[in-house]
Image (cartoon, rainbow, N blue to C red; front, side, top):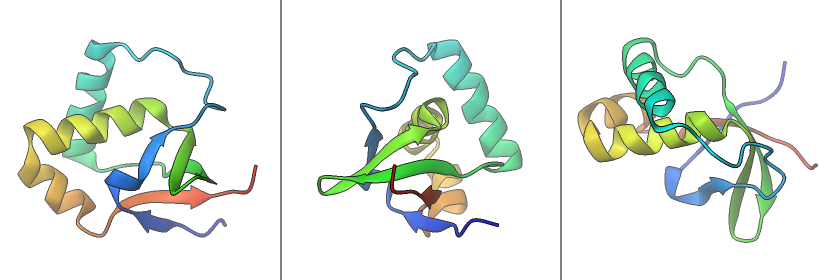
Length: 91
C-alpha cells in the first residue's frame, strides 16, 4: 500500500504531465457534491514540481476540492483541515 501524504491545497496545481486538459464544469460540480457527502475516495497522484506538487492523476478531483473551498468552506475544512490526501511519486 502506498503512503499517503497530506498536502496543503495551495501547493497543488495541474501537472504538465496530466492528460486531462479540460474539466467539464458540471462534472466538477457533481464530483464536489459527492466528495462533500462521502469524502475523497482516492488520493491524488502528485509529483514534486518546482516549489509545489503537480497533480499527475486527479485533475478533476483537484478542481472539485478547489470548488468546495470556494463555495462550501465548512465542508472543505471538515474534510481537508490536515491537507489534501496525495500519493507522492517521482515520475
